[in-house]
Image (tube, rainbow, N blue to C red; front, side, top):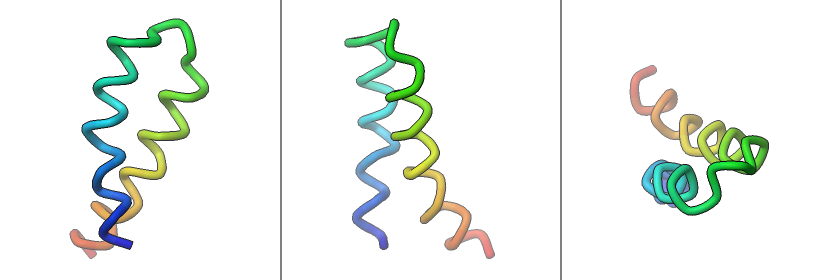
Length: 41
């Protein structure tokens, strides 16, 4: 599950590369938050 941490910086890059595709950015960011929540728990 820690491989999902790669999605956090990817979401930031996507925000600058494709700013018009909010659904894609949201989905990638949401999947990136899952391992962060597991680490905090």
